[in-house]
Length: 319
Image 1 (cartoon, rainbow, N blue to C red):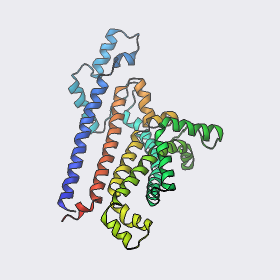
Image 2 (cartoon, one colour):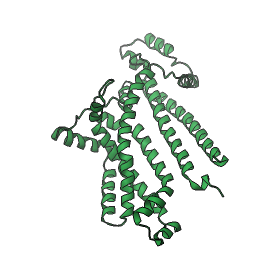
Image 3 (tube, rainbow, N blue to C red):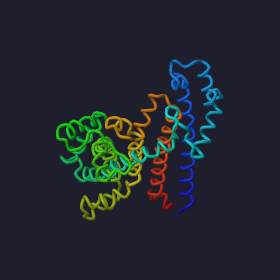
Image 4 (cartoon, rainbow, N blue to C red):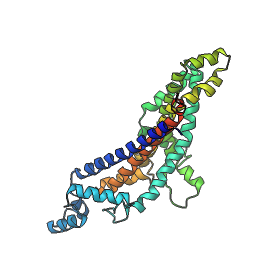
């Protein structure tokens, strides 16, 4: 691997770490300026002033903000996400099973949406400006026009209420048979697939069409190669970098954008866990979940940048 590529990758990784550090500051500041009193939320309205002061002292709420931030950040770096104020449970042990559920849901949606988006994008380019291209693009545009909660409720109404093919509430638990788990996540995974599929397909189509304007594509056409062969062998490999970036961005959305879908289907994932503790004003949980979401999103963006760098022939074979 050449030195310029290593340098670019190192820069992307360093930038990602700095960005995550900046996001951690924003998350901490954002949770600190929320209205209300954490101690009051825990003890209730009938708590005495002395009891409130004692709890604030025990939680370190009277310490300066920068001391509380570095204490929290130090705990995160050592794997200690803190303790939930509402339940007294360790946040790390509570989050892990829910994170696995969210990742499983995102993986199911990705397994369907990514290959399907690429195939539809290639098909739209093959029949560009024709009926098939207009049909695929029209359906994709209509799909992106509907909010995810609307898609989720429509799927519940049709497939859970009317047809009764799948459960409307996606209940999963440890030790659940894999086939039952798959059946439970069909509707939320389908909702996420419909949300991200159109965007990935349209961007794949745009990236390949941009490459199709290149001189070497015209040369391939003059050689008598078929349209699909030109797309598969010449256009798509050279459009892989922007396609990878689009796929990774949508994978990041699948992980961090599941909050609404998990609420609709009462799915025991990170989004449901976050909303439950936002209502309780459980600041340590909100901080931990927010930081995990940010880390996943930034990490996938770094992977997308690195994949784009490695897929760029101009960087792999500099003159």
